[in-house]
Amino acid sequence: MHRILLAALAAVLVSAPARAQQDSVVRGEQDFRACAACHSLEPDRNMTGPSLANLWGRNAGSLPSFDRYSDALKASGIIWDDRSLDAWLTDPERMVPDNAMPFEGIKDARTRADLLAFLKEATKPGAAPRQMAQGRGGMMGGGMMGGMMGGGRVPNLKNLDPPQHVTSITHCRDTYRVTTADGKTRAFWERNLRIKTDSSKDGPESGAPAIVPAGMMGDRADVIFAGPEEISKMIEPRC
Ligand code: HEC
Image 1 (cartoon, rainbow, N blue to C red):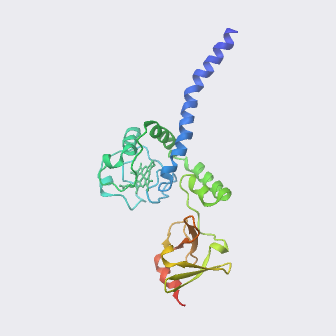
Image 2: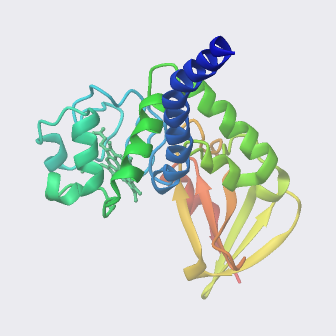
């Protein structure tokens, strides 16, 4: 009887901290949604902000593949670790005045601790393949949003379905008419159609721009080209 009790007690003592740590990582993964619109966890997949892969031990503002660091962050001399990241996430502007991260900070210490517990796992070298697998699963299951959750995946535009593949665009007065490979043409008020480029490996093939819905109402969309030189070539002034 005694031995069973002792064994049970030992099991609780060993597993409770491990379980608390695991719970923290799970909560942190939810909290990472506040970051995922701007940061991926895959090496060198940069979005509004730099990839966070391999973050611990890295000098602030030093990822060679990210071109948009502020001078302030580059000159900060910070090395990212538990302490410096906690200060950064508390109040980025206070830690590095004039930095370029549009984020007001997380005031709750437990939320920061959860987020850092998750990030420390998810940014380790070799952690990315798990994230990629999640991203793909999400995209297949739940469309674009599912893909975005798993560490900030954007949909790949290389192999377009006909309704996404733009074949021609005309412009007349205040209206763009966008025709896709399924033969359909949709009209947009010119202020509701955004023209973008994506030259990364996720971007469309040259000459095959993609149309992607934007916003909730269905009246807005993005047309994404492989590069800026294609844009005015494709848009034909015609009424
Ligand atoms: C709206 C976009 C945006 C959001 C949201 C955002 N970030 Fe950032 N983040 C950036 C940008 C842009 C930079 C580069 C800042 C600079 O150069 O001054 C950056 C920089 C960083 C850096 C420094 C990386 C390096 O290479 O030095 C870390 C760490 C970071 N962000 C973590 C986070 C975390 C964690 C969250 C969520 C709590 C978050 N960010 C939310 C855009 C964002």
